[in-house]
Each structure stands twice: as C-alpha cells, then as structure tokens.
Length: 264
Image 1 (tube, one colour):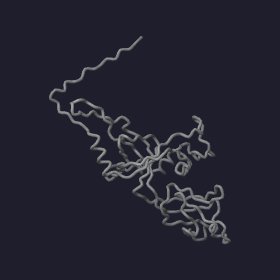
Image 2 (tube, helix red, strand yellow):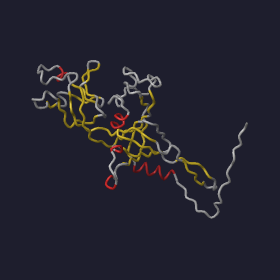
Image 3 (cartoon, rainbow, N blue to C red):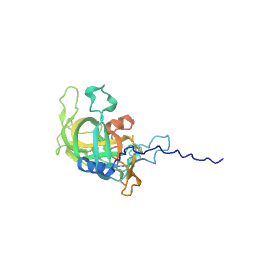
Image 4 (cartoon, rainbow, N blue to C red):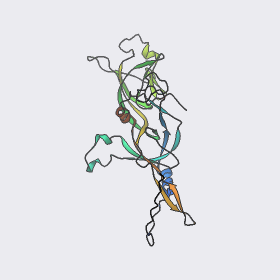
C-alpha cells in the first residue's frame, strides 16, 4: 500500500514583517573575535568489538577506544556556561563546561578534541612514574608548555624532594621525561624509579572534548536579489568540556585519550 504525502497549505504571510539571519555576519564576528582553535575529529578504534572493551595493548588508541584524525585550524567563539553562578545554585556538573561556535563549513562530532592555541591555563595533578621502552616519564593530563613546580614523595618522615627541570627532567612532546641523571644517580633517596609518586603544577594548552551538539540542524532561509528563498547554514554550536572532566566521566584510563600517537 503506497502512502501519499499531504502538503500543508502555507499560512497567509501578507503584510507580515520578515526577519532574516545572515550567516556572513556571524562568520565575520567569529573571525574577528574568535579564538584560534584546532579541531581533531574522533572515531572509535576498530580494536573495540561492539560491547567488548578496547584492547589495552592497542598502539592506535592506547586502550582508550578513541582515535583522533587530522587537525583543522580555524577560529571559534567560546563562552562559559557556568559563569552566572552568583544568581543560581552552583552545579558541579557544569564545571569546565563551555559553549563553542564555529563556522558552518566546519563540522563537529561527539568527543572531537578542541585545542585553544592562543591561550593557556594552569593545572596540577599527582601521577606515578611510568616506564615504556626504556624511558621513564609522566603521562600528564594535558600537553605541557612549562612546569611551575614538581615534587617527589620520599617518605612520611622526610621533606618532599624537589625535581628540577634540565637536571632531573626535560619536556618532550608535551610530557615530562626524566633524564639519565635522575634515573641512574647513586643517591638512592633522589633516584627516580618506576611507580614513584610525583606531584606537579604546570601551564598547558587549553583542551576540550565535545560532549553535545544541541543544534545539529541550524539552517535559515535568506532572500537573494531576485527575491527567491535560499537555504543557508548558520554557525555550528556545540557544548564542550575540559578534557580531564570528560575522561573521568567516561571512566577511561586517565591520559590514554590525550597522548594518542596515531596521526592520519
């Protein structure tokens, strides 16, 4: 049995004022006032079989189940969603959450990574020293730009050991890599070993993950010079959140999602 589509009659628009949105005006605002950002599209790693967890030994996703594609540089407007807490109840669910708007020619997907390249922020965390392929390092939550301070726990009765950049560690590929001097020192109290507890405070690139796209469909009709309606796409809007909040929320191993060695 075939179905017939019923076309609804349009309302009487005679004498009704018309309001149009002009995408170029939005794009001009984004270009002149937006931040410099880098978009990295995400997709599930094929090592994950449907409901089975991602393979922890996979070198493509490092056990996170997500892989990021080629970078796209553009400009975006980022506004905090949780900024008006003075007049409403504070919500922990909104911490680190912001709204992102970009030009319509760029598309966003869930868990795409957004990096703001012309700004930085401060983050502090406690990590354990890891050893992979002969290198001792800290897999920090963000790409490190500079380290403000770093300390190692020795024992409950001894002061914290200060870790010095250049002497004990270097920043390589956005993470902390310990030097041979720190690993092979004859002073056992100062020697860096796998599993040591290290706390550090550092400056980093601001990074987000897309957690929602509230306006997947965001088009408008604009009259051309011949008074004909043409459909135009408006800027894309997405809800984004600071990287470490999303990773904890996804119950993924911390840091695996960030330092993805695969580039396409």
